[in-house]
Length: 222
Image (cartoon, rainbow, N blue to C red; front, side):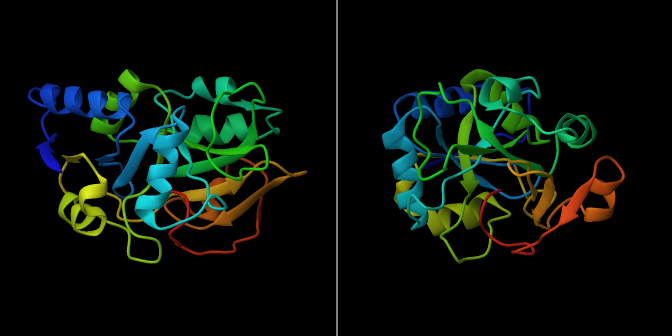
């Protein structure tokens, strides 16, 4: 494992270069986000996604979400978007909102037992966005062992994940410290299924979101 500083945009180029190379080879990278630290793999390399799940100690029944560099990527990954989804994206992306949508059936990936869905988020963190602009969509889950507290520093992530990770990008303490809120947009209406960085009241200012919270602040998707 190599820990590389990525706190300064003027000097983080070599660190991002190494992270891009690791991801292209199917390796795992820890990266900072606006919520908590994330564990990333190339979303379109099934063995890399399997390695991500194994590193966290979770199975295919808990597929990782996908981080994207731009809101426009949503249309490339998702289909049949419900009314209100674009309003939520416009209001809260980049930011702490993950949206579960129906995945484009033509996508050549294997995130696990997704049942034709994908959880998508655009993070509000300069280093994460800089990396995503170079790699494209990444499968990213919280950088911790399943059931353990989410990592808010690179050191915490490194301690939990160990040699399963090739590169850790150290961006300092994660500014949010709380995982993203998750809205399920795969049913007849929008449902908040995990409370997190963005509260229900704020979501309802933008769209008709029903409260159906199964896990308040839980570890699942980022």
